Image (cartoon, one colour):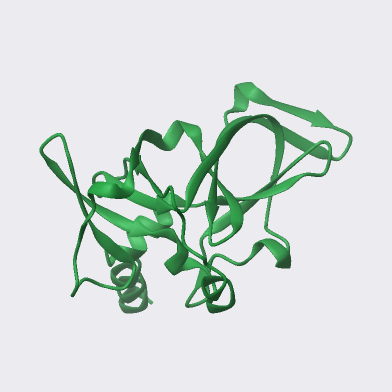
Length: 175
């Protein structure tokens, strides 16, 4: 998440230059590092899969490639999921991962933020993207004190791909 050439120290805080895409998920702002974003698409063309796992909304045909679409609100705590009123302008953020391209469904795309950010563990108020004791966010705070949770897209994709469970099982066998 950091680039050594774009960090600076300010007293006890270390700031990193980041560009993030700010999304709205169930009424809450969250961010994805802009470097991970390949494309933003309208959600209108999602083919919904009625018997898919809960976090997979459906699939999207992106220029002949079939891409699974993950509903990010699934990774919110139930209290926050209940607040979701839907959206009239949902978007799919296309990202690459070691498991192939995936679409991430958000209620809307709000803006791009760029600047110096301190990266840290999220405070309790920013820990709303958690499932089965796995935290799917980090937090960033700018010099003015504005904080955002940053979605760990690779961890979410690994989770829905079943790779976290496989890694945990492998770790338990080795110990």
